Image (cartoon, rainbow, N blue to C red; front, side, top):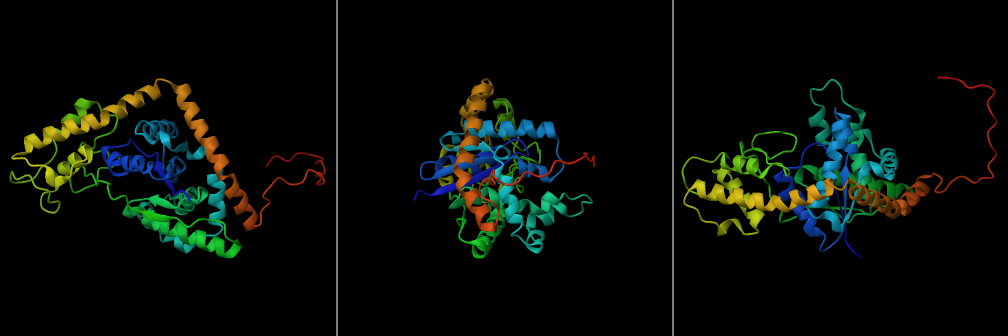
Amino acid sequence: MTKRVFSAFTASGHLTLGNLLGAMLPAVRLQDEADCVYAVANLHALTVKHDPALLRERTLEMATLMLACGMDRSLVYIQSEVPAHTELSYLLECTAHYGEMRRMIQFREKSAGNEEVRLSLLTYPALMAADILLHRAHQVPVGEDQRQHVELTRDLALRFNHRYGETFTLPEAVHPPVAARVMDLADPTAKMSKSRGSAGTIYLLDDPADAHRKIMRAVTDSGGEVVHDPANKPGVSNLLTILSACTGRPVESFSYEGYGALKRDVAEAVVETLRPIRERHAELSADPAELSRILTGGAARAAERTAGLMAAARQAIGLPSTALPSTAPAPAAPSSVAVL
């Protein structure tokens, strides 16, 4: 049986070099060995305060960049365009317990100190579980901060299967061994983040001159020795990690006598890595009809591929798996219409 991999990218900000090297390029490489499904998780962005127009813009940008990065050999679609995600999420909410949702680390972190906490922030791990289980995924590439969500997904699938009959495939969390952890260029002790908005963040659609300038201004460390030592020389180590990820060469293969030459090589490697992505993004953006065709087709394929799983889940939990018979008696017509 072909291994199926699922991963989703939340449309919560502009994609960064860290996202590319740490998650997106490993996802592209997975296409050589697995049946890959990649979604833009725009529904997850609704769990916190957001701007509707900005969300639509970032959702489209995310989908376009996923295709531009090389995920076009996979099933790529926008999560909200496949209603089965929210339907299965509700069935899993009816399987989950309040206590286990409340204990999720991200809920505790994001709700701490906030007076207005959206209910969806508490329940969205069920939606994440639905994303995975809907596609009968065998593996889910995640960072350490998302491992708890995959564990919850397994717990919900096991509980559902035990109560209602074998329905779901149990997924496994995996950490791609080639993933690079890219740190902020201005603060190499913090991870490069699409939501942090630091001057040390390189975005995939940055102008080459801007990307070059950010790298040349990157924070380095005391002393002039260029060695990969994250604990004692985080700035230089971060630059070497980026150079290694962009060139495919091991960190140990680089030798420099000063920071200037290292930064110049890193800047050149980053600009060259981003160049084909920027060009493909521009091509797709210039042809909205073609982009719409790809994404609409992806959503249709996702709906078709998951229909059987949804029918099985409905049947197992006690819901009609097909439309009610047309011979059912029609309800009596109301004598008046009440406006509530």
